[in-house]
Image 1 (cartoon, helix red, strand yellow):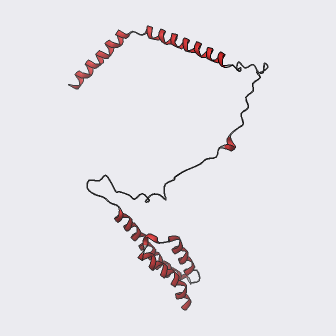
Image 2 (cartoon, one colour; image 1 turned 60 degrees about the horizontal axis):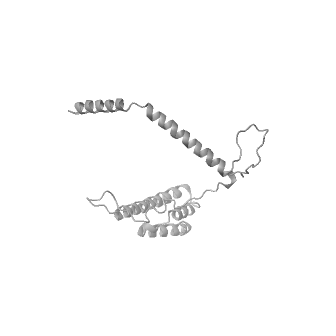
Image 3 (cartoon, helix red, strand yellow; image 1 turned 45 degrees about the vertical axis):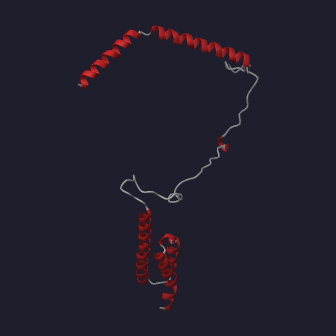
Length: 172
């Protein structure tokens, strides 16, 4: 019987200190202490010691939860509890990095056009590129102007006025 008491001293001492200071309790350590305390015991003794220890570990959890809830500041005028800055720090990711270098492929610009490829793509100098851009903008302006001239503005005005009148009548 002395070995039974000797093995449990570490477990019960740690549980007592955890109950006195639940905020600093090391739950992983408590479970490890329980494991080492019940390993050499017989089945009935293991169940008895484990039941008592688990009951006290649950009390530590309850005391810690009550302490957290008591520290939350709630008033009738507030929208909710006010949490300390460090309250969720362990649950939030501060930074993240992702290395995509293995997925990147080296790009080599082929400056010589290949006549056998059948492609219409070619390398242009700046003057040619600017001239093409000016030509494209001029064509776009011409197309937009033609589209605007086709629109019947008075017809749209009448339709909007009719909808406004019908909407106002429906509200009354």
